[in-house]
Amino acid sequence: MEFKIKRSIFLDGMQKTLGIVEKKTTMPILNNVLIRTDQGKIKIVATDREIGLVADYEAQILQDGDITLSARKIYEMIREIQGETIHVQKNDQCVVTLKSQKSVYKIPGIPADDFPNVAVDQDVKFYRMKGEILKNLILKTSFSMSTDEIRKNLNGIFLDMEPDKPGVIKAVATDGHRLAMVSVYLGDKETLKLEKGIIIPRKGVSEIRKLVESEHGDIWIGVHQGMCVLKTDHTMLKVSLIDADYPDYRRVIPAEKGTSIQFDRDAALHALRRMSVISSERYSGVIIKLMEGKIILNSTNPDVGEANDEIEVTGRGGDLEVGYNVNYLIDAIEAIDDKNVVFEIGAGMKPGVVHPAENDQFFCIIMPLRI
Figure: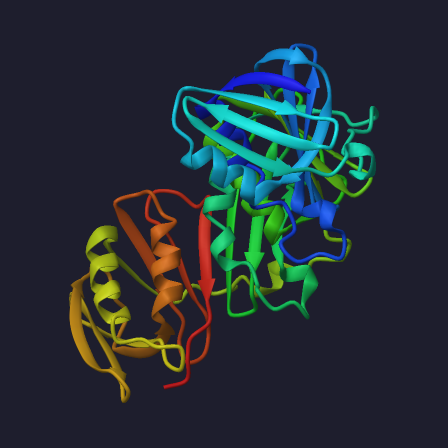
């Protein structure tokens, strides 16, 4: 195997694999990426058996072949090497040489025969979707995913379709203390269909987000036999879905509206971040006291100190004092793009709801803290 490739292209290709390759595995080959020449291009493949990435890049192919190399080490070599073009060559002992200008690296590889297959099933039906839509679904919900490995079904984002609203897709994430949900209209043309919802695991969500952030324009998405497959012009990503039932999130949505106030998004974020300075792993609460035309914020932590601030608000329905996790409030408000935010504060231990003032496509439910 021998080829020449632009350093910037090679670096980008290897960087996409770093989040997928296994760092701790009983199969050393899963620490590696497969590099294979294919019809005048090179193909880079990475997998941890749950997620698979296949990407092809333009290169000058001098001799066909394949090899697997340590993903982390080959990335670091390409990152540090100088020059616009890298010359890659494999010898008969599976040692790969990288040359650029006066720099030369040599790295031992493992033959490609034992590398897992990451082919796509031919029966997958793909649907076109704007990459911006998928990015929006992830950004507005992923912060609420659970990190509790015991509750496997909450360790991801739940995608569901509205049965009574054709073309509308919903993304939901919850960790049991908060829930974020966003609805997006895909259009009246043929769009993705989900007979029942799917749960994309946390690691898969991270890789999908990287893909849609690096690509502009449309993507192709399909779901088949427990896999979600995404394709762009040069990249294919396969993600194994979580095989479990998602809890009925509709039961968490409050039937009654709480005391509704409205405030400026940026002003609230700045004030809440000032409160979060006082937070620690043991305590990250903020007490919100509702008064005429404003809310008073207080955060007291015996280990750190105390912070007080206030935010101007409109709308009120009586004096209230309630505590919330300050980081949960920050996450929810950051996910809103509008200038004005509505916060419906539940009485007692009822949840609060954060949503944009101008639309109802997104909301975040947050359980209060005992104060």
